[in-house]
Amino acid sequence: MAKSLGRRVLFSGYAKLPTGITATELYKVIGLVILVDLDTETIVEADCTLATQVARKHVAETMAGQSLKNGPEPIVRLIDQVYQGSAKKAIITAFRISYDKYRSFKEGALPAMFD
Image (cartoon, rainbow, N blue to C red; front, side, top):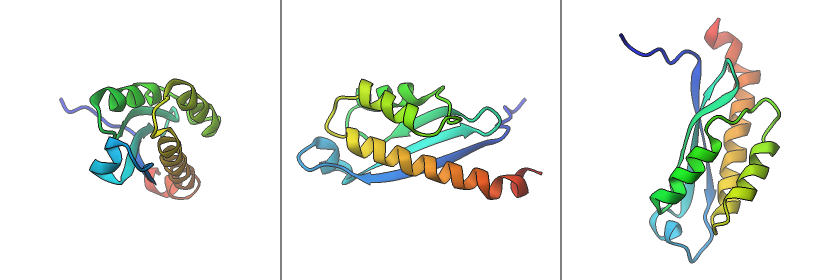
């Protein structure tokens, strides 16, 4: 039996990485994606383009399960606390962009798409 994805939508955001770090040499920008369950307004999965597996996994695990109901700030504060790498500002910016896309989608396309 195929797994139902229900009302899950993927949102992405991109931000310029700081110079002088490995991720910049590889990617120039960070890409961050969040898969959101629209019924619960919760991040189901997250991923990003950081240079190391540990950093990617830590960001993904930090964001997974977080609620978007109270806006982006609780998650921004959490990232600010648990990620002390050079790409922190870019991660937060990419997340804010992803959140803005989620909010716009929820306000506009959501009713027509899922009726």
